[in-house]
Amino acid sequence: MSVAAEQFVQRAVTFAQSHPELLAATLVSLIVLVGGGYVLHQFARPAGVRFASVLAEHEHVSILTHPNPDPDAMAAAMGVASLAEQVDTEAVIQFPGQIRHQENRAFRNVLEVDLEPIDRVDDLQSWAVILVDHNEPRGFSDSERLTPLAVVDHHPGEGRGEVFTDVRTEYGACSSVIAEYFEDLDATPVPPDVHESEVDSAYVVPSKVATGLFFGILTDTNRLTSGPDPADFDASSYLSAGVDENLLDRIANPQVSAETLEIKATAIRERKVEGAFAISDVGDVSNVDAIPQAVDELILLEGITAAIVYGTRDGVLYLSGRSRDDRVHMGRVLDAALDDIPGGDGGGHTRMGGGQISLDEEEFVWPGRRTGLVDRLWRALEGDL
Image (cartoon, rainbow, N blue to C red; front, side):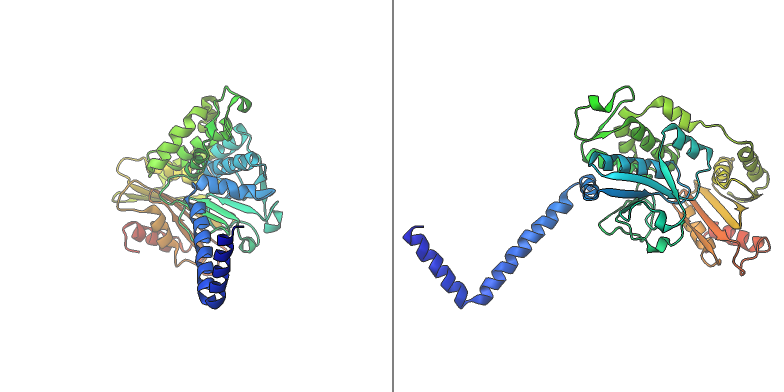
């Protein structure tokens, strides 16, 4: 070190010793600047890059769907599992409830989705849990004990992940969010006639995953006609190169059971109509997934702009609603109608919603309370609740 440099260092040390408060302030400022820069750098990265880095920090993760998962939930889980695999993280997809709807069963079987059922929180394969297509654990015993590592969703709610939360309520499907993650990583959708090893890309969207995500978007937006966001169209376009049209056709056109057709017919035959609104009771059913399918048919009737169908199974009353009326936000309608009913819970989006009531509640005796429930539904549709 030169003499001049030594003299500078000695003067700096002397100054710091005589002004310790300035030294402390300078050090704090440097720490804040460095730390702030790091935080800004972290959050400036695209969401997909941040999500992939979260996955990469764990050896194992459990990907959890909502109860009785639909194509959007299963597709989102497939996408997360694929991303996890590509960052060398083992992943298992798990779900509470059952998969009964013929379209859901076809989706699982045709795309060979590996899902494991759970009944209680201890059935989870890992405590590093990623919630997809919902933001609060539910549908299994002791679900309140679970604090998820990450949440990726498009439904309204207060649930958050410990490390990562991405809830985009403006999006029509959770699959669109996952597709955007792949795009953030510059992943290449793999065409159905090309093997993944032939694609020169750090990340890929396997054809079955692309097909699943594409169909997930279609189902949750009613073929991009009900409440889609521009992001849903962008995601569909991005995924299209990897879609297997043969598999897509097999998923979209499964055989329908005789019971489902009968429930649809019952919903139409038993409908009560007031103005442009319809409500129908389909009675006791063995397949609750037929209820939303029935309301999908009811809303298509000429002159009907909002419809609700309800039925019972195993001590639970299930409700499903659809709206193509700008005056009727179906999620809010069902939330308001069931809000003060013991054991009742409802919600959803502008165009579609669902709810259920436990019939085991002593304060809600069914079918004696049917008239009161239907009155609340009419009032909610009219905006009086």
